[in-house]
Image: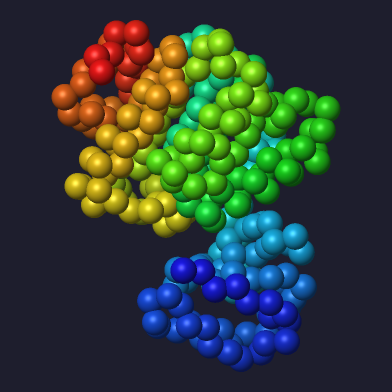
Length: 277
Ligand SMILES: C[S@@+](CC[C@H](N)C(=O)[O-])C[C@H]1O[C@@H](n2cnc3c(N)ncnc32)[C@H](O)[C@@H]1O
């Protein structure tokens, strides 16, 4: 559950009950967020929205020292990557399909690379905060690079993939590539390596782990199986699963037909016409 609080500018000292029943005390006058709506999500997060209710950024506490987190597709380094999107391993692994359905959009980096390489993309993301941040990032992109049509090829669906099949089908029809080839991309969360020092993990990855639903091992297997099943429903060309280099296959008993290897990651390719039912 998420609480939405408005007119925070008037609050100098208040308590917010979070869904876990504990409370966060905010003792500061909130100046930088004064005209915004603030959503308080699971305990420590403060989500800033604009007047339309679109999520702008997120932070752990209201402090002028903490840089809020947002998804950005407009930075010069990301633009550079976009220009060379065809060289990305994910793009090479996904092959020639006209439309890519990314059922696990996350921070949208892989999806944007697909769009940068000229493909239509449907992104699906179950975390409402991540989906909100993705939406804002796409709007920022449009504002800054209106003439560039990358963002026009991207559609975003908010929700668990298992509950969005109807919406996905409608978007496929809208894109009009139903008779052409569709590939599905899967990059579900794998648990954080407890031995990796936090300081070495990129800030955006830390946020991803905080905002995405954490599945236990059983839940993860079940989620992977559901994602694979949905992928088979829509893919006409291939399904690509991104894994950490030493991770097991997405589906224990289904071997991929090929893999593309990076330094730390692996992209397992399943050819739809060679998959058994
Ligand atoms: C590792 S991240 C993906 C990162 C992404 N490839 C990128 O380039 O930023 C996995 C994301 O998939 C989402 N996810 C996992 N299972 C999902 C499901 N069944 N439906 C929709 N989203 C899901 C999680 O919320 C998380 O944000």
